Image (cartoon, helix red, strand yellow):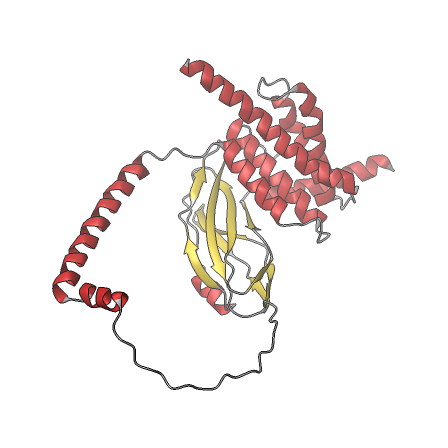
Length: 317
């Protein structure tokens, strides 16, 4: 009976790997519940085969249809791997009416063998809340006659700055300032250092922690996100194909690596195996295992980051 169960698990897992062969798209939100006018960050993470020409779609129309306002759409960042490339893009949005909203299914596509491959992200529900109003909102004050006042210091100051000559000088000064800021930004942009694999992984883990999946009983989404973050990190740091392969194939390759403490290896492997069981075999983990999985991820990344920083200090000295 156990043999049949293991065989069924292997088949289900193989289907999952085939689905990941063309890529995978995920959405991470700062929060799925916020007040009217509050700005929330949405991060798109897409994995595609290495070297694939790819760009993020324009989602303005999709957000407008849901009455969500796009505040800012940053340029995408790329983490190159041997087999897969990981693209990231951060979008800032808000809403002005209370109610339930849906981040619609996003379709990403790229050319492959004279055909177009589509990757779809799962839709995500958002809740926008109205602030509580206190006090007597029915009271209307009497209309009083507006009295003319003598010009004060601020009035004279306003008259001075609205003079045509002064306005022309101010416009010239603003133009010079804008040119100076532009040139300084150009210089800084050339010196920008790309984020390390550890910095990107820690940002993704922090975003996952803020999503409160466990409080919403979304254990499958929670462990699937952990597995994706760790596999993407292994691909970026150790240059090992981890996104499309079983845990038992790639984990032995990093066993004994000087960046990975021996005390963390077994727990690291257990977290990935539990995520596989939850995702493909619909296992139900204990609450303590859920919390420990995320804390171990932070501990693992911080441990490797500390070793790399120590190496950098020794090289500089």
